[in-house]
Length: 357
Image (cartoon, rainbow, N blue to C red; front, side):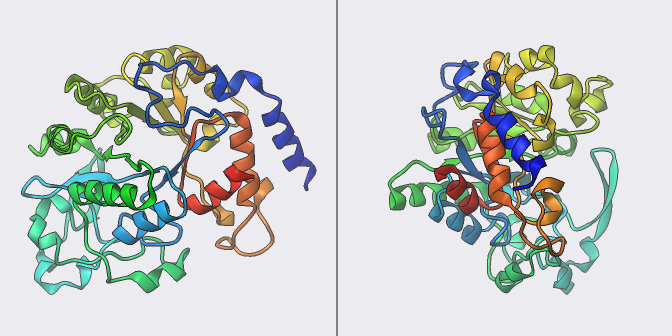
């Protein structure tokens, strides 16, 4: 083991102030979807098992659960007829075969999403029936070429279909699989007359999703506060970026940045409306964020854990190319040793194996 790697692991193991045992839930329901064993952090399948299957597909979610994931994550965007569908972005040329459909060629356009111009095809320009004619493809074909074998096989799913799938998988595997929906670009969609929160709240009520079955996340505090106002009784998760600030705050002239939100005072403010934070994993390295979040009564689930060298810290990379696997198990050991309450991962099978170890 490299000296640098050994020192990181020892430092993590020796940091009691940052362990999950110090956490006090911000709300009575905050711990419900989580294991009560503080040495058993949750494994969240990021877009399913995106390391092994095209993201946000039934096969991706199913494989995540088959290999031990506790929650599965659907990102939510709306269709033209205001149905919530599951895509990481509303621009779908990277994750579907839309570009090969001549009947939709004239839908290619440029939109300004969260202040940035984006060119392609957008879910809000398609009805659900039209989206159902498309098929999913691997988003990172040059990184995960093996996943391209599944290209063209899977439909675009609705949020309702993901809920139904989670419940079927819960019955099959004898454990509760929680859905972990994220509201994507909520300020942008609200400006189009396609707000996400009312549709999501209606789905949670219609399906009677309880606190063990659903946790709602967003990078935008306003979106989470709108969900909180619905009094659904489900935990809320404030996702945190590494640069800039949430777009709802930026667009309103509020100068608060993600870095401001990760100070002790900022975390205390988050705890007034949310139960979890989801920082980029790099935000926890050598910082008091984890300990401060636990002190504020928040649970912490860093993102995104991936196995390829290019996504790993330098000390965990192995000889080979950028797309070859590095020492992912050492990275999980580091963060589990820090005392995180969950990990968000493209490879839930590896995270579960590391958790057993």
